[in-house]
Length: 247
Image 1 (cartoon, rainbow, N blue to C red):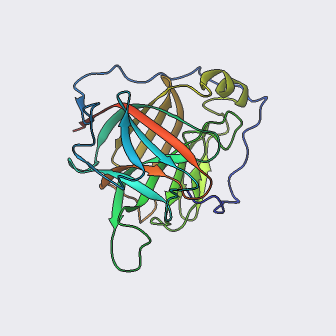
Image 2: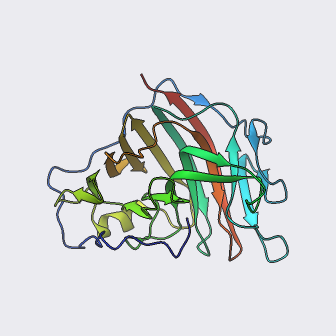
Image 3: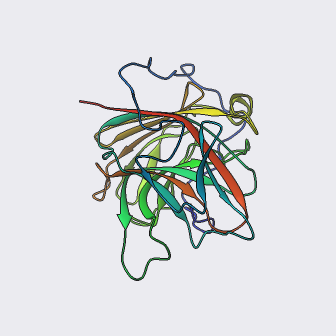
């Protein structure tokens, strides 16, 4: 995501809040199809200066010598994400952030900064444990759905209506609970479930974000991609990537 974008209407989760009905766990896994072979980038398209495969994982890395020319993405070429369930594991450095794009658009043309520009819903990826700047919130990459920035944060359950997010008073996870849930400098497991305009993000088996998008510009279908952020040198890795369509 672009670091300078913010959304003033969203508030930081109170550390002392209590989850009302207990944590909700991810659905049991079934019927998934692997979309990364663990050996090479077959079926994916991106800047090969920045993306490679190391030790069975997709490895994206920028350095001072080889920076990204604007945010750049590794795009899955095997289909689109519409109503779907996606599962993968990730880890990344603490120097920058990354993201998982879904239901998104590949932007091309003479004015784009590189050939792999993607816009749309982004599941934020960060190696941080202090809310709200942690992995799992939805960011409106490129302002595709009205330049909403951080649409909904980790811990929130809400509905976007009109020009604002209407969220539940009770958090799905507290700040202290997230610190215990997330594995710094290690692999974390993500599940994304999208049905119609309803989207849920799970981290390490626990529901951490629940969003219903009633905006007129809701994204219902589009591509899947992985982000490398421009700016400070960083790395992000992804493995065990699997998906299934939902009826």
